[in-house]
Structures are given as C-alpha cells and as structure tokens.
Length: 142
Image 1 (cartoon, helix red, strand yellow):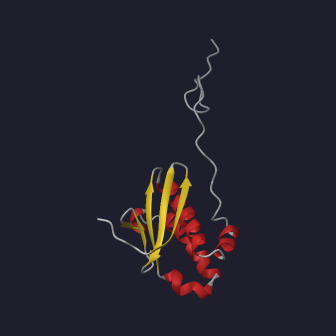
Image 2 (cartoon, rainbow, N blue to C red; image 1 turned 45 degrees about the vertical axis):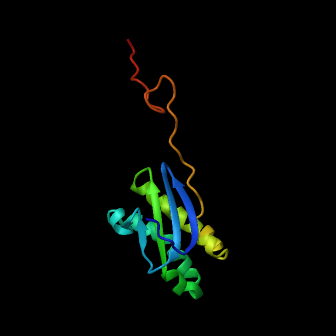
Image 3 (cartoon, one colour; image 1 turned 60 degrees about the vertical axis):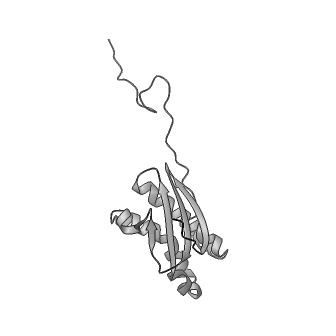
C-alpha cells in the first residue's frame, strides 16, 4: 500500500544508535513519526517535542516571506534504534538537512544555531580484561 506523495525533500540524521529518515511534503503542518503523531510517539516529553520542532521554527522566524509555505509542511519520519532522546536528536538533524535541500538560504540560519552539526560522541568499545569500557574488577591487596 504505497501512497504516491509530492515529496519536497528528504534528510537523514543520526545520533547514538538512532537513525531518522525524514520526508517533507505539502500538507497541514503535522509531524508523523513511525505512523503516529509526533507528541504521542515522543510520549509528550517537552524536551523531545521542542527539539524536533526547533529547526522548522528557526527557519520560520528568520524567513517570514516563506511562512505560509513552511506552515503547511508535513514532516513524515521513519526512525529506528536508540532511545527516545537519541531519536529526537536524530530527527532534529534530519529535519534541518531536509530544509536545506528545499532552499539553500535556510542553511545559514540553521548552521548558525548548530542544527546542522552531528554529535560525534559514540559508545566506547570494551577492552580486553575489563568488564566494560573502563570498569575493572575490584583490586585485592591480599
């Protein structure tokens, strides 16, 4: 059951173990994440909801001439892996990248606020002889 949509742009974002694929289409201005409304999927967590909206709000604030066009964008998200916070940050990066594809002028305002910077921190690998990356067995004096 594939629905043919008029996709304006696509973006991919990653954070920790989470990967988000975003499509921006003409619609009524709603966030759909894995088939659910955005606030429902993110469990009404205010930090996560604000994080996924922030790139779009930044562009709306700085480019008032495109306000009507930006208000009517639907954001369709497919996200997998990681936890809710990692997924929210992956969605934020993907939305920012998708907005840059629509209009190159948006890039400057998004880059200035740090929305196009991917967080490079990853989980440290486990070392031989240790329980975790840095956790060792307790030292015994005798």
